[in-house]
Amino acid sequence: QLQLVESGGGLVQAGGSLRLSCAAAGIRLNGYTVGWFRQAPGKEREAVSCISLSISGTDYSDSVKGRFTIARDNAKGEVYLQMDNLKPADTAVYYCAAQWAPFVRTCAVTNGAAHYDHWGQGTTVTVSS
Image (cartoon, rainbow, N blue to C red; front, side, top):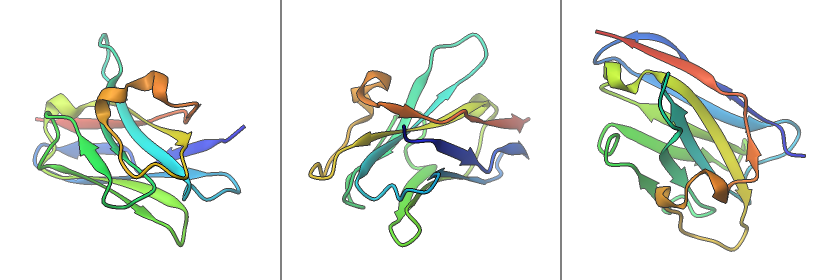
């Protein structure tokens, strides 16, 4: 079972930035499509972004497009979510998820949570106004 670990969450003021990381214990994520999701208190889990095997295969939800950037470092086998111009509405627990897809070069946030087999425990992002 792939064990995903997120890191990089924290408390930041509105307009600030954070970078979240997603890594797998002992395994590189190079052959996986990786998605970032978030869940705010009392709300459903929301897909935020995804990246396929190809570093150019990315997608974003409308709520974060232009502010968040997903990337992967194949040398380290990790995936990152750079979050800029953060807003209080971005406050949530952020999860990374992975799906083995070594031949898939695109992804879509509309695929949803059911598309992914492996999940991390989440990291909390709090944006103060």
